Length: 236
Image (tube, rainbow, N blue to C red; front, side, top):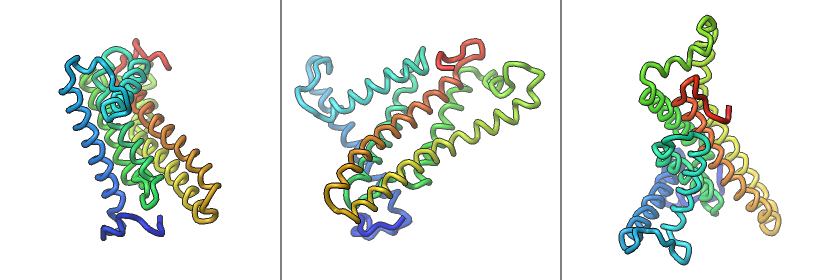
């Protein structure tokens, strides 16, 4: 996707590495936020029980962590805290990547399929890892289906369904953010003032929703992976 100007170009970064450079920038921001929040927690005398009186890195991350924790508990259920660190990382990284794309001179890394596929692959590896860790070899029963004599039909379907998940996660995120950023660029070039504000507001909504959807779907996949057939998640 061509852009009239990007900060990566100004820094002399080759175009094929723009999405990687911007992703690294976002990761740097997250690391700084975490460092400031950790320092603030260490300096408190009440072990962080009293929130700050204004918006700080600590407050911001606490809001994200509390939201994701509550969502994980409702979707995954028992021992959901095990999966919260990765889910928070997904949500925060995607959210900031999406918001960065709304700053002039930046393209969201999530509008590049390489980045979104990588995120989908991490989610895929994570829920399969936790599935095997929770159930051992019994995790493979998920691919057989509830009725053993349908295994010949169910196993190929379940394998294909599992392998498609990282691509579906990545493609959904990529398509929405690519389209949103393209529309924003077009109307900004055409109108310059007034009209782009509407699309910035819509873009803000899209950035939050897409971070939420990716995190929610990852949680659902984890819930399916760690649940036994006789103890399926409540949302099924």
